[in-house]
Image 1 (cartoon, rainbow, N blue to C red):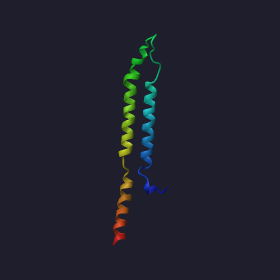
Image 2 (image 1 turned 90 degrees about the horizontal axis):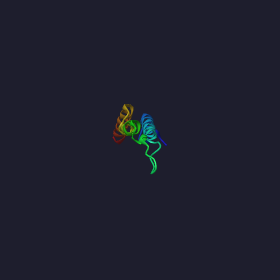
Image 3 (image 1 turned 45 degrees about the vertical axis):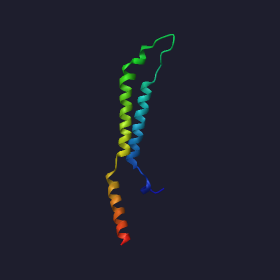
Image 4 (image 1 turned 90 degrees about the vertical axis):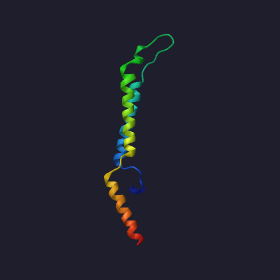
Length: 91
């Protein structure tokens, strides 16, 4: 496959992978033993599970959105060159 036909660049994929890893870390921080019918486990309301882990997941999702929206400056010049080449070819 030709590199020019890819929707994302290398940096987009790197940022996307980092964001996905951060989301997975957030979900791991949320996991743990729960309560059952016989015993109540107060650990389900710990600060790590209720406050820290959702913020970590949110930051991961924000970075993934940024990775999708981010555009390299080098790709802008490439697109301009392609447009100019098409204009010159049509003449």
